[in-house]
Length: 159
Image (tube, rainbow, N blue to C red; front, side, top):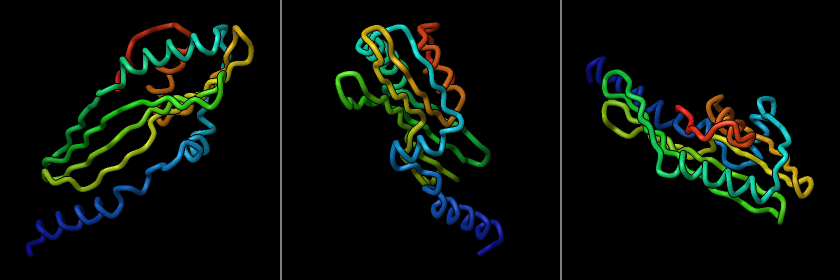
């Protein structure tokens, strides 16, 4: 085996071995990891109204959305996003924005991971007020959720 083949084999083995190392497996774990970057605010809007408005915006921007980063020598990563809503009670729920990542090197899939990109916890505090806590890995997700909650924009984030 030549040095180039050996080097490529080592890279592939490392990518396979480390592919799932940073995967967050539960919403609680994601919240804990991103606690210091979380944003908490209250809006003058009923829980149901805010939930419906956010659901429409999140569906518009993340359902079926994907992006690909192209590297050198055939390396690439495909990011595919999705979103679900979990109801905890009549006035409490969570939006989970997920990301599925498929990494390739030299055209070979070397690792995949399924994790969270952002979480938004909603809690109705009165008939016309809702608190929201946003946890996000990247500033783009946090900003998008913040401006959507505050009804400042309906634009999809540039990821």
